[in-house]
Image (tube, rainbow, N blue to C red; front, side, top):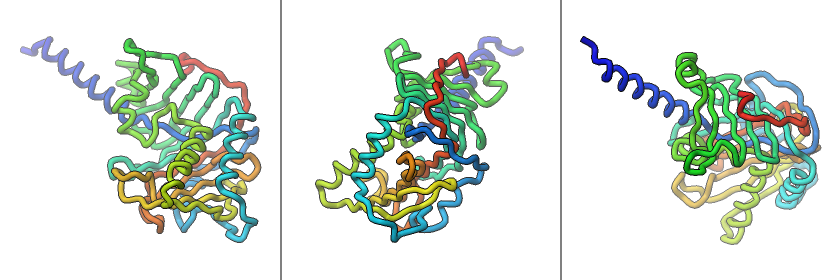
Length: 289
């Protein structure tokens, strides 16, 4: 005869395991802030996929008038601070986590800067998460920790637990991505790059160059390349080669490629932002997911 208590424990164990799997699927993204502009629509196989093919992906003119790469990045950050409150975009990412390069994912993203709010809706390669929502200073746990609100992709799990809250900075979130969700945004991307430049240049091991002009999603870009003596994920440097595309009109970092080797044979991560529309006036709460 079935034991109701045993069955209940089995069901609860399954629910907890399913929630953990969903949580592991959450990954932070890098996307944008910048002066108002709308970019052309692309399909699932967009600039990110095409740009893997050759050295310094997306570069089309290496003879362009040289620019100071650090000054260009600093100007981009200043524009982020000055010109943008919110944005909507399509974001594509691919990351190597725990030695495994995961398939690319696309998501529709809405972002507001004050307070920092992120709403992500997965468009393809949907595994465990349908959408996620984060707002700075809101949805705190009993211990006062910020949480991400998740809607699972599976109908059964949504029926059992329609929305799930996980620690935005906990072990699950950190194991699932190179960045946590509160590090989302063009401004955060530029700050990380500039912080690394200032830390690494003192040791004399970094090389940073203006590589010329390029094109991402049909838009002209400035291309900056940073090289470091990367020696693995446990070493002091984040990658061997970092390639950044700044939109020439807005200076938004619309693409970032990270490689474990100078020859670009081992991709660590790729982030590409398209269909950007800024200053839409969007504001949201978790009731919207």
